[in-house]
Amino acid sequence: MESVDIASLILRLTVGLTIFAHGWNHAFGGGRIAGTGRWFESIGLRPGRLHALMATGTELGAGAMLALGLFTPLAAAGVVGTMLVAMVTNHLRNGFFIFRPGEGYEYVLMLILVACAAGALGGGAVSLDGVLGIEDTLDGWLGLAIAAGAGGVGGALLLAVFWRPERKAAEEA
Image 1: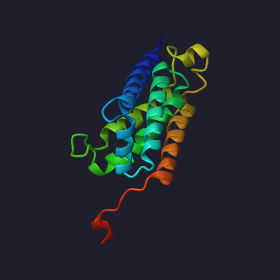
Image 2 (image 1 turned 180 degrees about the horizontal axis):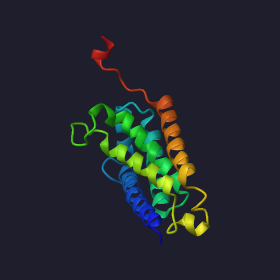
Image 3 (image 1 turned 180 degrees about the vertical axis):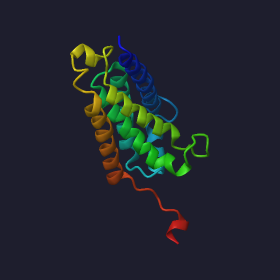
Image 4 (image 1 turned 135 degrees about the vertical axis):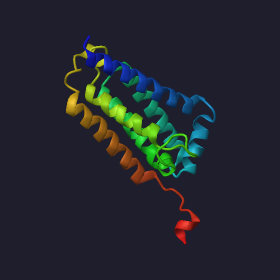
């Protein structure tokens, strides 16, 4: 196994399982889908239930695919898109550091960039991409373009169509 295969495996498992756990928590933890939907409504993503279902499905699916190394750049695009939406709708206004009130964007930015790196590396030898013989066709610049491009465009389109945050009284005056 080459060093790039080891790096790919570590990145894919770390980010994939983290995103899968995030989706699992949306579905089965705390307020479940209904609570997640209410929270999405509160930050301007409407309809909230639809976005809770979409985010949960994307996180579960992309997380599992990334951990398994199945169509790795496409799975990474799912991470990029969901974390881009999270960054813009909730974290960006709170500054960089995660420990700031409201949680800054450092964590979601790191997930976006690591997902882009995983897309560029591809699945590697220890992946379903490797088993299917496509590990060398979906990596490098093409893998990065798929991860960053599809994830970025998908997240931006979702925001453009569905994000309607409430304006604060100071902004309206």
